[in-house]
Amino acid sequence: MKNIVVFCGSSDGFDNDIITLAYKLGEKLAEEKISLVYGAAKIGIMGKVAEGILKNGGKAIGVIPEFLKKKELVHTGLTQLYTTDNMHERKLLMHELSDAIITLPGGYGTLEELFEMITWAQLGLHQKPIGILNINGFYNDLISMIKTMVEKGFLKEENYRMLLIDDNIDNLLNKMKNYKPSIVPKWIKKSHL
View 1 (cartoon, one colour):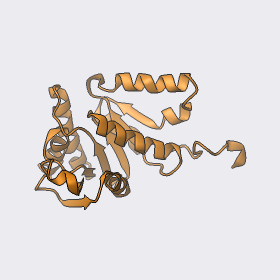
View 2 (view 1 turned 90 degrees about the vertical axis):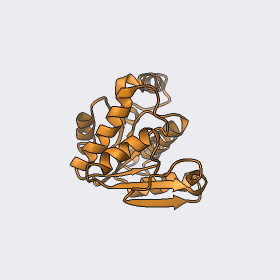
View 3 (view 1 turned 135 degrees about the horizontal axis):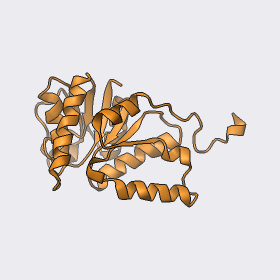
View 4 (view 1 turned 30 degrees about the vertical axis):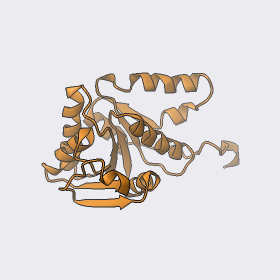
């Protein structure tokens, strides 16, 4: 893994452990010589990850749509900054620039980014590892809901297993490095291979 896209909030939230681990993730990426691809802001959890990587000699690549350049505070110390026309182009470019995906706590936008990437994987459009850093159980309810989707027959077990979940940065990165993607996309039956 050379580049990891990190999806996370542009707010700090109220849990100091989330802020601390976001910074530590940036530190770890710098240590591992893995570049950060993210939403380009210097605020919130996004800013903490960027700060963690940049202060430790790593590279941070920001991707932001033109209309958000005026609303969000763009980090001025990035290694590289891309500007897109819209949110769809932003997600596509972040995907194209990365070898893997990590999701930290965030709001609607973070969930939307995570689910688009996992849907693309489910459909066989990519085979990148997708991780959730589940800090202080932030995503426990979401994980429970996804398990309910499996139990009720709306999601296959192997598609649930595409999500690599851990509350420890090193453990999550190890799971991602050792990830073996399913070779069967959602809409192809094994008997037709």
